[in-house]
Length: 182
Image (cartoon, rainbow, N blue to C red; front, side, top):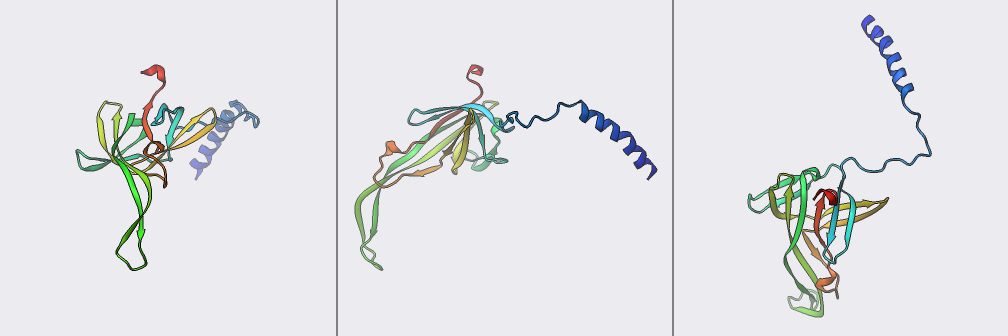
């Protein structure tokens, strides 16, 4: 008990001196809003749009890729990635249909169609190892100058009725690092 009291008596003045030496908090100074787990990079979309800024995913999440070569899931942290490239594996137009009447097994096509795609994702790690496979939809956030864009890396994507394949915009490539690092 005496040791604890002695230790507290020695530590309190040290902590107080440390706090007094720090600069007081300015409530009017803008806060640093960059997340510690974000990385600088560039996102290129299939329609040619480019987003540059700090890139991050949902907090404490990793990109889960089903490695088609190894036949297992790999959870890859953002910090271990150099590049993500998404290619179209399959695509097509699906016709809309309905049942002719309740309880019937006859299909009637409405004449409308919607586009669909399946994607293949290749992740290049910082050690230049490549992992290719499929993934579920993963949100990716790009923050530039306080403006935040939410983009989705799709594994599969389905459009609305009446859309064309060209209307389905997807992330084509994500390159991590500042442009002058390449």
